[in-house]
Image 1 (cartoon, helix red, strand yellow):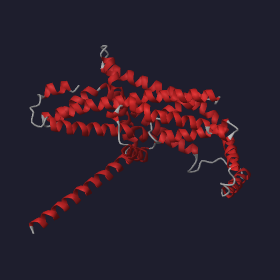
Image 2 (spheres, rainbow, N blue to C red):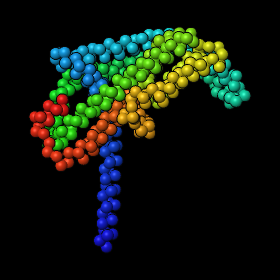
Image 3 (cartoon, rainbow, N blue to C red):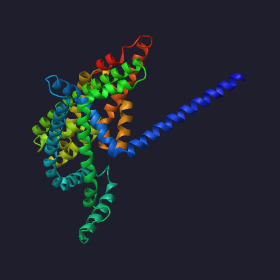
Length: 367
């Protein structure tokens, strides 16, 4: 009877623990989705700040105050980002005029595959009918609920506010990162827990910085290779496509897939032959395969290797929650979680029976 009662109690406790975990996960997901406007720029600033933390340390070794080093980091990051976006957006606007040519090339390709794709004839007729109807309709300029003008007017203030919040958060995080570490350590009840927390801060910063800097160098190499290959093929705007490939490569799985589709469309608009149209996408696929299978594992190392299934789940969740921005923070968030859990387990075992340092020495060693 006692054994039965114990089993029932254990089953009840396990069910309660699982239900609690489920509620925590659902409430956290809801909190992230509803708080996207505020949380997204703040989390992104922390990720970028962790990346540039070691850079700020080197600047401060020259006698530069933290407030100035934080400002330098913000200015350098803003100039690099604006320059990259400008180099992509301006040439990209010229390719939008070639979208009708893309549709014609797709029609030609479908015509070549008419035997296998005969079912698309009905779809094409419907599209032609809708196109003729649209051309014959009177042009009326109005600002309805779905108007792009109204959407831009509505979204623009939020985007500007998020950008300002990101830059401000990045500055204060970089400029006060040492105070944040020391203050966090002082909040722990025991000195041993504080020592563990301080080491977690230091290791997480190193891991995220190492990953993002390494990935940035790798992505720069990918962009150079893509630009060179497209330039050799005679495709206009090769530098722009290379920069876009470098940016999209930050979003694991999703970014390369989008770039592959984009280069397939570029090939259709640049070559008459359907076979040659596959060349840009094929070359990019080869570059991406070599980078993901050989270069990234060699540069980042086995210590930074993450489970691909966990990476996929993280990317899926963050893109669902925050869109493209979530794709950028998906992998760094996994690295942060790995650093926290790994260090906590290691230090919990290593320092279980040792006497920790006093709080002042602890705060100094974690900086």
